[in-house]
Length: 250
Image (tube, rainbow, N blue to C red):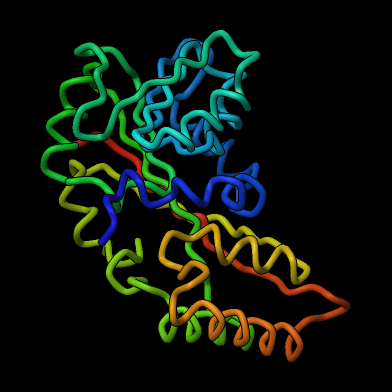
């Protein structure tokens, strides 16, 4: 399996264009947890800056901690006008941030890549007293025939989809990370794609095969079949639950 810090190096363009953002209700919920213009936030595994872009105007300092060079540079370009955005070449296990330096840690679509034991040791080091950890994911819901077919295609043709699927992180595993007052909150989210967008969304994922792989053409063929069968006026829809886990860590 490819090093998790390098898996997205050749996916950045599609990642920027086609990965889902987070609904306004979810962002407002983050502010209800206490994130404000006085807050210092470390977004760990910040990628291309999807969550950073949503928070940057309403926090004091925002550290984008990202080990992948290509993704980190994409975020730096996106957020270059904001002096309160600090891009850091670091990882969840070694952020390089000072002790007791941040009020909140956010991890958006990233926590499943971390070494939980090592990252939590680091999180405890950099969080201020009573600081909070916030984990976010956009979980695709297979609640339509198209999305059921999409899931089946990934299971049949993706390289290591089963192994790296973030939904392998169960609520029971996450519950062990927080003290007893943690909460789970869910918001609906969606995207709509034409066929070009569908292909971009598909190949933004690190587990999809690249050109030359034995399953590459097979996966594209299956996507064409699904799109032709299920598109409505030239578009298909992805449905998600935006799931947020928040609280103080053990």
